[in-house]
Image 1 (tube, one colour):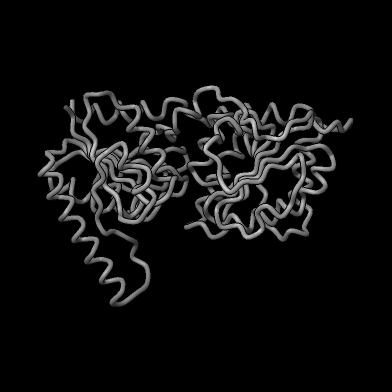
Image 2: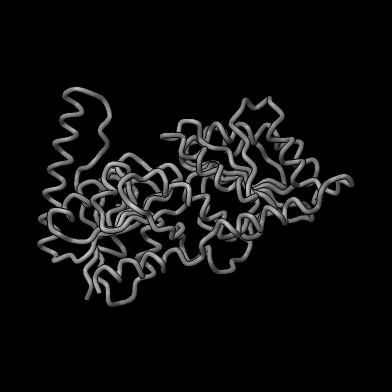
Length: 358
């Protein structure tokens, strides 16, 4: 039995890739999960793996506050070190974020191999600081490789849940009709700004016969105010694989998790990077998709500005019956997204972990 500690916490962008890797392991692996209290992992992990939590967070602020956070991070490192020894852990895998810091440092102190996976094109602070202490570093996007000092990362791609890799039906609650299907995914961060852009163009799109599924996120105050037979508006859906596989076009933020799911589904996408993302990493992620022709970037703008509507009409023109529209746009974008995808990213990471304990 190979004993693995997975350190992944906070957002779906950190958790879902780690869960995809865990699901790819065979029965010869024993998994323990390191997380933080009151975060998303406390809902997703315990029913499948034993979850151990420590207090770990960022080093925001200054003075005494930052000193306290640093001391707490050091204390977490020593607690994880004791955990590794007690569990006789053989390898550590982390998807970054602040929980990665105590995991990487503890593994280093114990002489245990550690693998860090960085999903974004612009690596996070923990990755930039601690990647050099890992046995191996993997990246989801090629652009990240040159931005991680002190190591030579492996390009593995971004693991996604198996449901995205297998054909899924279109959910039965999606509006029916002959028009193109537009899927809008606001995401958990910055959904309100994107939602306002989208709602400004909905009346005209619906009038033209476009079917729209709008996943608004959970904190949108205007959800449900617009009613139309061609519009389905929901805070969230666990049927995103089926939506993306059948969508003619998507509008989405450019987080690494969303981008990888769009890529493996081959979904042509308008990417609207979250303007307040750390180190502008969503801008860099979006650029990776645009460079291969899989996406068009539209920057967040005021609802009254026409850029989003003009872009949607240009891309969906052929499906909306416009005689002058270019019918090759969407198929070309679909191929571009497929070229960005790595279908076996989870298995590549499992093989890497296995090689370190063989």
